[in-house]
Amino acid sequence: MKKIISILREYYQDHFNWLGFFLCTLLGVSLIIVAYHKDFYLTYIEREPNLNLQIIRYCGLYAIAFVGAFIVQGFAERDLKFLASANWWLLNVLAIVLFAIRGSDVNYAALIFGKVDGDVYGYYSKIAYNLGGLLLLIIPCFIYWIFADRPHQNFYGFKIKDVDLKPYLILLSMMLPLLFWAGTQADFLDTYPRYTKIGISEAHQHYKLYISTYELAYGSDFVFTEFFFRGFIVLAFATKFGHRAILPMCVYYITIHFGKPLGETISSFFGGLLLGVIAYRTKSIYGGIIVHLGIAYLMEIFAFLGRSGYLHF
Image (cartoon, rainbow, N blue to C red; front, side, top):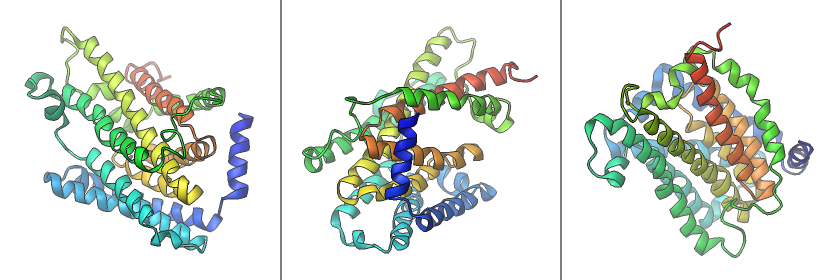
């Protein structure tokens, strides 16, 4: 735990700018207000039936969050020279377009599994969506790394040497009271556990197998997401632009939580900041993966307990 505190203190002393933090937070809050007001995000982006228009709208949302945060932070630090960098623009296009396509209603099930029986379509579509992160996040970023960053760093955070994982387990344990409380909240239980959304009846003879394989695929999505935000966005930008991607990444990270419980969306900013600073300093995302996966599966467990009545006293 002392190591994490030391990393945060170092970031605060060397890079933290109160005006930049305030402006990025204000941008994030503004986006949250708009997204949740009369279900604006769900109505006009997530549920947009035209796939091409949906992707364009995702790109617009992510550009406002990520590019906008970069610019307001640059304004606060009185340094906007990055706007003249072709590499900065290229990285922005990759960071925005890849996740816009990844988050859209592309028929991953048809791409990966082909024709799927109607009774288990929901299951296969969610499995395929989770595995889609490999196709749209890992592989394109790996190609970019081969040509641009291979001489400078490991593959965006996949570094295990000299990484102490104990502090992250402590961080995870500190989340238990909050997750216990979440398991008693109606909006949380409407969303979790996620396996209840796959459309497989408990009476199905292979129900437990479907749930187990779904949970494994569900966990893989958190690995891909952690890699993309703390690995690619923070560490690819860090090669040329130092710490400056951390706060914009946090604002961007908020937007991928739209449609989820409001408390989860708000907390994603601070969780993203913590994990982003740690990834920037350690050049490793394994700690973040442990925290992210741990929280995800604990949310599943506490939601199951909450729905089963074990958390109501």
